[in-house]
Length: 326
Image (cartoon, rainbow, N blue to C red; front, top):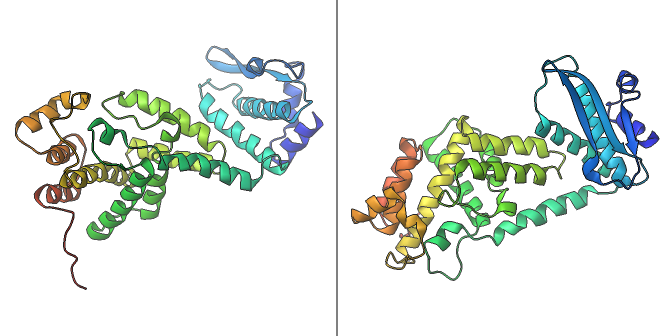
């Protein structure tokens, strides 16, 4: 307990009034009790928080100390809300608790900053080997198909070019950072397309995955805010990034189309072919890549600049162009 108090004081979390309030309300159970039993529990009456209960393990190991840090931070958050209307903000409290867990690990050299960097890097490195699902669905015949990591690179380069040529009033470095992490959840859930899972289901899975991944970084909460901002695409940076994300995929399809890598007669197992808009465009005689570009223009909120680039790709061969002399 002394080590817990010492840590809380170091982090300016210690409040004597909290411990006075919690006297007799903290139950300490044997250190080897199943972890799933532990927790911080608000007592709510007439929709207001009136009391708190804590169930924590006896501190005999660093693991038990981490559990205590986690639950005490939860309780301290609730203590500040005593007398107010209770709001279910467990995810938010979990992130704060995980942040202080991480700080303790670093302070005690149980996990070094170097280890944290390597853990995050190795996890993200998986994206180099996760192939974009769309190309597999369309049976694109190429020995080496685009990975998610390559898509991230491509969409960042597209963002730089779009900002350069159309002079958007945006923070491009924020956009680049946003795009760097926008596929982070796919290290856990893989690349799921709109034809495999609903937007709501994917967002739920992805957000849970990203939240867990970023708990390993001290700046994780700030990075997660960028990820969520991208997903909502309400700010000017996130809206710009979202359009880049979608157009990059369209342009990659155009490149594969110009290389004749997809055969529309070899799509027996491709459920995407059954989409009404896909069928409508193909029945009009559109090529595979032109269909894809027009599909994007129809369902994504492209502004006039993004539509202009998309139309250029429809009307021109964008690969094997002669380099202009400087």
